[in-house]
Length: 243
Image (tube, rainbow, N blue to C red):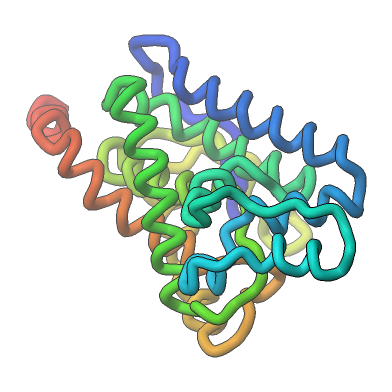
């Protein structure tokens, strides 16, 4: 198992969009915590992307809370906006920290390649593609999907395409032994994708194991490959010729 800590891949400019996304995710998580357990759970259900709600364009949370005499806390209308709001919500500190670590490590170089505006478009499009494959794999699920993982999966794919040999300072877990190593990015990212794909196949026909939407990761990753070639293909080919 690998845990990347830092890449050794300098950028030319300050990654404003990456910083802004990290700040937005942290701000939303703090707001979630401020709601407490009961309202926080309703908030997640309302603004998370629930496959059944998207597939049927219906607000289950608004109906349930109103019918039960609880606080009416409907999700956004139209309901497909939850595909965006859910990207900024997380299920706990570890979930948030892991996603923000990956965004911090790999996002700045992708932003440096694309520029901040195109980077934001890339990020959101990867997240939407992640949702699309997750919903297609289990359209009857009533479990809200939250987290930036799908969008960050797209960033990992873009980093793999553009900077496959960039060096990454990594914690390597070998059973009870832990050591620090500098590994090429392609080793870490390909290993990560293979794990997502294997567990995604294993989750077919059931709920996401451990609350992880594996096919969202796969969808975001595949979209990231297509998007980075579409948005920066010429630059990447030039980098390879020069590099």
